[in-house]
Image (cartoon, rainbow, N blue to C red):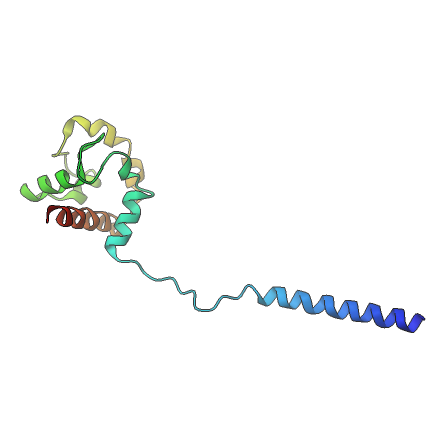
Length: 133
C-alpha cells in the first residue's frame, strides 16, 4: 500500500513540475515585431490621443478653436510654419482671440518630439487636402 501511495505522490510531483515548465514557455511570442506607422497615422493618433487637439479643433468647423481646414488654409496662404507656432516660436495667426485657451495645451505640446510635431502637421495638411477636394 505504501508503494502505491509513493508512486501516486511521485506521479503528482512529476505532473506539477511539468506544468510549471509549460507556464514559463507560454509567455514567448513569436512574430510580434512592432510595425512603424506612417507619419499620417502617427499624426492622427497624436491629434486624437495624447495631444487632445480634437477637443478644441474639429476638421471642418470652428469649435473652441478654429477648424483644421481653416488653420491649414491660413498657414498655406501666409506661407507660415505651423510647427514654429506649436513650439511657441511664432505668434498665432488664425484666431488670436482663442489663443489664451490654446496656451494651456502648450504643456502637452512641449513633450512632443520633432517627429511627432511633423506628424501632426502632415496629418492636418492631408486632412485639409482631402476635405478640399
